[in-house]
Length: 342
Image 1 (spheres, one colour):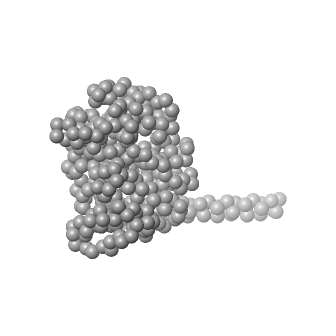
Image 2: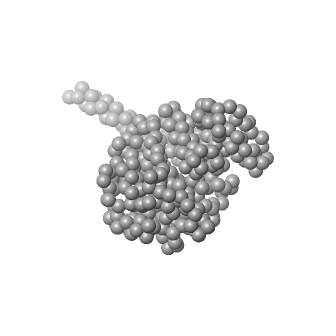
Image 3: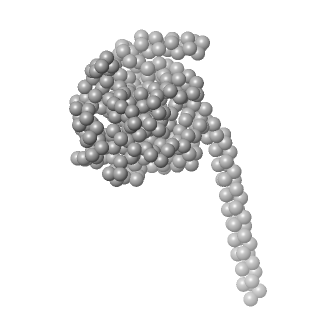
């Protein structure tokens, strides 16, 4: 009997020790999270969006596919008011198919801006910031976007430099324009950067990557420009993912935080990053809208627009790419906008 009591006492002591250990671990984890939050996420400007984001009641989308609007603003400071979105993209985290996807929307795309008029999609940001731009994307493309991230060109430069540069295959025809853009950026900042002297695969600095992303007069104008932007982001993201370094990711967040505005909470950002890492995603697929075969560029009323023809066809393609839905039939709202365009 005494022996059994002794065994029970030892078992009780072990249980007590385990409980105390768990409490200590929980305290360390929670305090560690607090420190990480303050150090790496504390500088991010979080903005709350309204409830009405023009998401059609007809949509019934896969909950395992998250879409976030990405906006690039051509400013050097942190005041985005009245700016046009120089870059508009949709970033997709697809947990079901274990994919990352990136869709560029051409900034001259002719769309219906809610409460305004038909105009270029990048004007929506100047009219009503990220909220109106999200509404515009959702209404015109049958999307269900509820979150966004906005960065300026300063952020891209800092991000690229923080990971040691980005690998880009620079074409011979791009060198002069790249260096011209580089010189303009140097004048603005009062700095002197190393110019690109040869073509081929090479590691670009942050400033060189920004200059590369801004090339417009080489290749197929803005089409090639958006492709360069996606290439920079793809190579940047896949480089980080393949490295699978938590230290690098945290350093990247710390670098980015002063230059970012987002509707995502810190918990949501950590959740998305965790999802991408745990799924083992290391590649990114990309596309752009409108498609060449489903659009026409021209001048109307003295202003250049890129008009989808038809919007319905572009939306059907977009849903096949993002949601992997074949034979998608756009909503009545999109059909109505499409008919009005044409």
